[in-house]
Image (cartoon, rainbow, N blue to C red; front, side):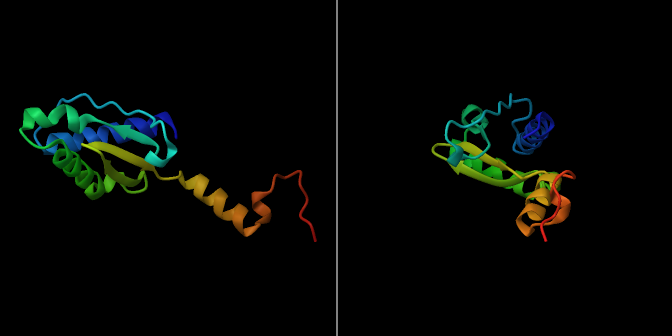
Length: 121
């Protein structure tokens, strides 16, 4: 994941927060300890829930729904899930060039081999 992807995700979460009345909250994205929890994790719902007088899991669900509906997240965020009391776990979509490379390698495409590696016949 590139640093600009992380910045884009933070911006999308900030937009979602503004939509639920929590503009200005600090969005911190961290790498989860377990890969099973995705590529990024955010606990901002836990931080803003009390000020919104809402359940933190409810706030996390509202943020997750806003991310899923935001066209800017398509192609960037592959999956959003809520864990525990309101943690937001995110999986970042593979970059278009990564998807192409994976597809080419899986198909055994000659164009996926380095130029110095001749094709076997």
